Amino acid sequence: MGEKYYEELCAHFGKEKLEEEVQEKINAYFGLLTREAALYLLAKKIGAAREEQVALAGIKPWMKRVRACGRIARIFPMQEYGKNGIVKKSVRVCLEDEGGECTLVLWNANAMRLFGEIGVGDAVLIENAYMTREGELSLGAEGKIERLKAAPLGKIGHLKEGVHNVEGVVKEIFLDYPYMKNGRESRMCSFSLAQGMREARVVVWANPQRVNELKVGEEVRIENALFKNNELQLGEFARILSRKSKEEGWIEGEMENLALLGDGIVARIGGREVVFEKEISPAILGLKFLPEGVSLATALKLAGKEQGGKNVRVKVQEKSGKLHARAIEKK
View 1 (cartoon, rainbow, N blue to C red):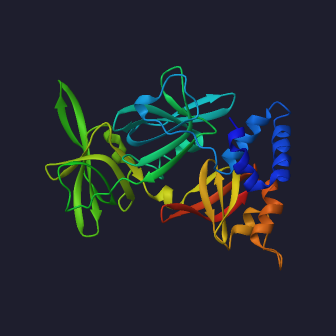
View 2 (spheres, rainbow, N blue to C red):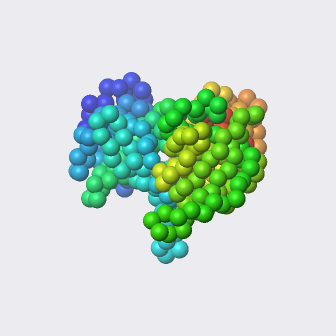
View 3 (cartoon, rainbow, N blue to C red):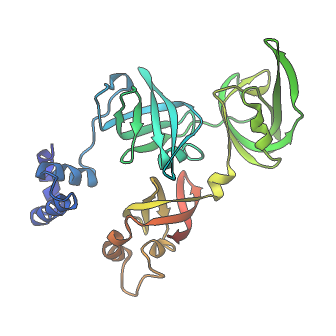
């Protein structure tokens, strides 16, 4: 499995350095790792080893390390599980491609990315997933999900009949409207969504209590809305997401995979990729500033391993589709 990457690893590390890296990797696993497995892990680290991509219809019950692409057709509500004081979160997603569909389960940090970073209609790449006994594709702690292409956003005033994702500002919230359905009284809620001078009425049929959580002036994203009769109609599959938490929120978790990116650093925080620009990069390495004559690359080489694995809390802001750090709190 790993020997086929040997020549490429030698070219990357050098033969002598490679043997040191292999032994270090084996020692990290208390001697339980074979040489071949160590070579494979190093190949993955430098991007030389990638699982073959499979179509969703071709995924079998026994498969592990699944790499596949698809479009998110639906995102289900988050579920929480508590045991011994530890809370775990999971979200199920309906993933589809040209040949089929499957249920994908995301956990904890990856699950949280579905509430502000990745949405319905987005094309995504998943790596290191595995099939469960329940026939679901699961993205565990080593799994990765990456957005390849964002779903297009509709423009009010130019919407055609069909399903759309739309962003805007809540302009007005209307009174509830009671109605009878199958001999039982139900209610419908609605509000006005504005994009500049253009407005559209949003009618919420399923889970109308969602409107009670909105505030006038709040920026929201609506997913899977059906535009019909000049209204955006929200059924069971539609979502309403606040944009404020995405733009001004904090994320926290274990820091890993620190690497140079231009004149800054990129790292994964709680499973999410965050860019630390030049001015803030020393802070992620535990430094107030870079010592005179020391490059960021040198500082990363000296302090990067020590910082990896530490829990941090980072204030982030999205810019050009990526999360950029604005403040750091180390725990």
